[in-house]
Length: 245
Image (cartoon, rainbow, N blue to C red):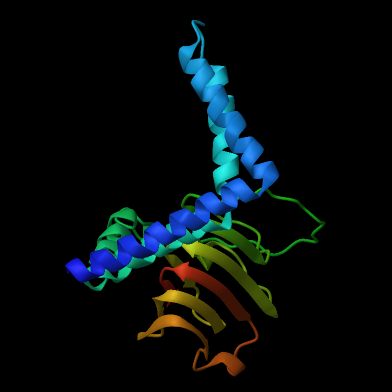
């Protein structure tokens, strides 16, 4: 147990040294960090009544400088990986259990689903949230291929409230940390192409554990259906579940 923590602390110390190296050798990032610290220090010593705007600017500059370094994200990733692997991933299992405690598939209500046909589409632009939980399909929606990039959070995609076209449809999700669950109506051929640093894939009652691996699997009746769904996902740490409803 102690050897594990010694290894973790040693790697973290080296990564922190690397972080400060990146922070000081990049002139732009260094100026942002120094400006943020100077603003925070001068604001704390100031006699102004309303210091919040100045604090906000200082925190923003300092945070932007820190988040601009790749070393910071490596530190976060290594820490999360160590915690997830330690004690056989007990922490991550409890974490995911709490997050999905109130998930819609745990409800016992019977809901009759209505669907809507597709209509001609035009281009659109949508802003994405990098952090947070995403739920797609809580109400009736017109199908359009899904493309998400998420830093951290759980994702639920329920296709029971849409009408998939008689062609190939795509769900593309790139994620740093978090669990992904996709609910697919019966009668749809499914192909999964998934890669993960650490995680599991649950598909058609089969569970695959991945450790810095990628996998490509098809549903048993994939070629027999006109409607096909291709799920292309990649994640740092997290599980993927594709469930027929």
